[in-house]
Image 1: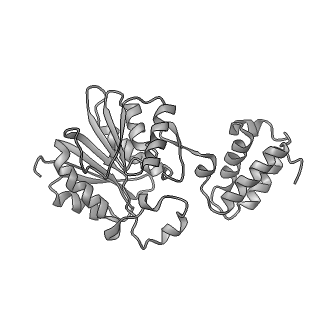
Image 2: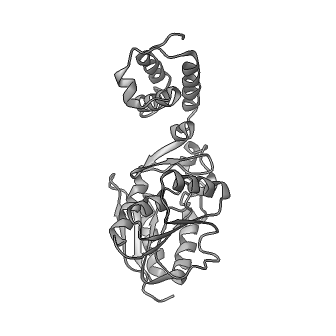
Image 3: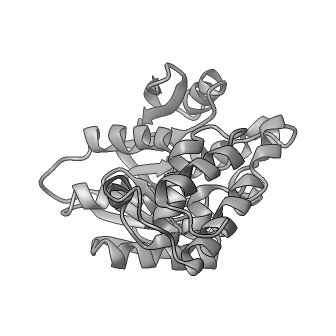
Length: 281
């Protein structure tokens, strides 16, 4: 396998990854990473011969991907919204469907004037930083229990030059001391402990995925805390599983939230549920 051209290396990689969805895309991303080149360069120079070091790095990347390690962990970053985020195995990989949560939040947050938002379980900071980048006058807090995850999120704030986010370590809103909020957003753990999809997520932090009570325990806790820390008329928004819309709407309504609705993602699946705090706790 020496003296492979870019085109030959990509063909070999696609064959190795044939059992994986998006094998061709993953092969391009990993070859560009191994060669420290943009993907467009690969298309421009298909006859270029890889060096021994480049080929060795590429083969290692393909081996890791063939063992189901996510591409984002191999290259150490993931695109989300309009930004690029560093990711490690201390954080979940930001997923396209989570952009629906950002989109709904931005449809509510005014473009001018002050507005206070907290992102609970921020992980890589993808939600908080995407919101803050679009609403520079908003004050955004990003909370997570994991110190390593917070360090990743802080690094992402620096690399994307987003100053209006404050990072804190904490368990949801327990001990919150910054006054009442205009909005709470969260993509909390919502996978049930017996969910068969967990077998495909072995590389990601299980504490950021799994919740008790059929995946609803953290949503219940955050909802109860939200009644104490949201301003009257403030918003609570959750991302949740495709089959949890009805249950999450019920949780919010029982806690006194009004105008409760579930938004479907681009696949037509329940993805985000939101409600307005009535002012009654």
